[in-house]
Image (cartoon, rainbow, N blue to C red):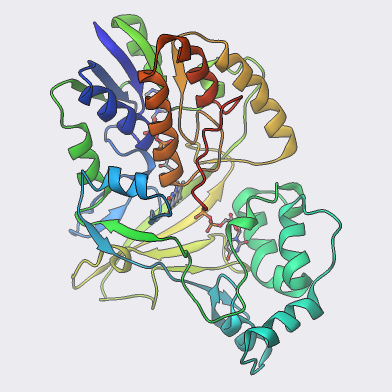
Length: 387
Ligand code: FAD
Ligand code: UDP
């Protein structure tokens, strides 16, 4: 008899498994993939290069709690992520900063005030910022929007930015200074020996049983447990009762190149050219010394494994129906990016899972609220991470 059956060995499942096991609960963790780590899984490829199977994963957070928690399972390598975009034959920093503007327009703006004035001269005023188009056009105008955002977003999501919630492009700030880091979070680090190694440490507990390569639907009827923690797609859990929730997928094309480095930074975005959105070179992320180099090309796709919830008003309405059903389903707790249909980064999933654990371990009268919190209905599960 297990206290918890946990579907998914990604961040959501692993955090809950580790926390509950450490409190003496017996936990069965299953994953339909043959490995742990969920989408953060990394591994040495056939040439000995450490690569991220499901695309580049860079850890960043403002949450001391999340950072301290994960630090129990890994040491870290300091790493500040930098991204360039290939536009009009030039490589320019993303997020847009002073150098992006100077390079693209042949300008020599030197102060933040000058860059601010440039943006103001380009910006199209909007009365309300609802969509991903509004976010960018209202800040930097249509030309920069078209050079950097419009086509990338159409490729990545199969939708125009005007159809997507503001939160998608709002992930990328606009800067008037020369800061060319992708993130400005307080903690920007990579697990020193990789994400998978960190997950191995999290799940290495005598109260945790791990079964890989098996689906929740096949396992659940065969084992005894008290409660379920589910981190797979929420619509699938309910047999697509209200219809399918759209998730965007990607096809990853991995390659080893017989050269030491391909590109000057970890990621180069291709907003307007090619069928892929970006090229990642892992050695920049991992710090690995190797004569060859491992890269991945990301091709967005409608079909395939679910990677991204698609933030549109219609999808939010459909998710709300599933969230209500989830909240009313006893002894099942939904947690993670797919189960709560949120475009969450790793640290946000860790924070969400830690919050769920707090509720699970609180007095029984909180049990109902825990279910609601996990699907974001009434309790604030998204901590103020500032990300
Ligand atoms: P997942 O990692 O998806 O884990 C869910 C697990 O559940 C999966 O392993 C799946 O196989 C399993 N599962 C599902 N259904 C079942 C079932 N029925 N039975 C058994 N098992 C099941 N975040 C960052 O912070 N920084 C980044 O740089 C970053 N880059 C990203 C790049 C890409 C291309 C993608 C797709 C995501 C990126 N993320 C990044 C987000 C990050 O991957 C997620 O926030 C995090 O991995 C979510 O963890 P999770 O446990 O909720 O879900
Ligand atoms: N985006 C863009 N151009 C860029 C970078 C990002 O249009 O050069 C938009 C695009 O819609 C993308 C979103 O901003 O999906 C979020 O970018 P991020 O790099 O955070 O995406 P992720 O790493 O989650 O795939």
